[in-house]
Image 1 (cartoon, rainbow, N blue to C red):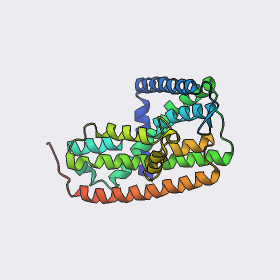
Image 2 (image 1 turned 90 degrees about the vertical axis):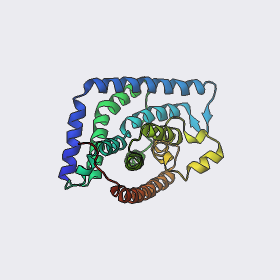
Image 3 (image 1 turned 180 degrees about the horizontal axis):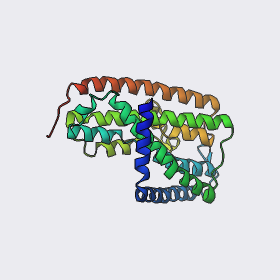
Image 4 (image 1 turned 45 degrees about the vertical axis):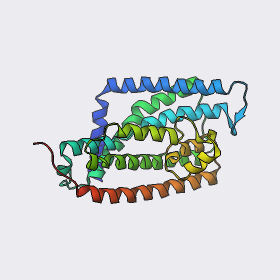
Length: 263
């Protein structure tokens, strides 16, 4: 545990040194937040509710979606790809701590840094300009926080699976971006799946993507009842177990393919 905390702390301190990168990220996210909010405001002109959702609920959904995107961004796929490409993954295997614990600690440090440097400033701007409301009850708020933690676990495990493909293809190329695009489209990050055709919604229930963004956001804006929220969190937990099992199987196969490149 001490090693995990130390690695996460080092990643936080490292990221804090790149202030220009933080300013650029915050600026781009502010533009995205304003663009999506005004898009939904335009869509609701002359309309009271759509799929049971009012304009303020969708505004809140959009703002929190941008906030979550800064937190749920996982770098593990890039780390694995770089370590495999450089041959350093063979060295990582001799460390006294699991390499995936190291990679997880690195991403947890990124999450904490993003929460402080990006998410909080965006939340303040969202409250000032658009008035993000509080959740209905304290229980809903804590359910939202817990669901966000489960969302991060699902997102991280999916990224780790994509990263481990590097053991077979040696260079992922744009595979990470493809994964991010799929998650963005099927998770409800850009457009909630409630607005999609019924057949699409039915299929999406059997995929892990909507449990990354739409599930916690649906809890916060009141789209879900407390029982529905608890059920959704149970499904999130099931997906974590499934993805963790798949990761373990893929990693056992990947270790047999480890080879050292370069000098």
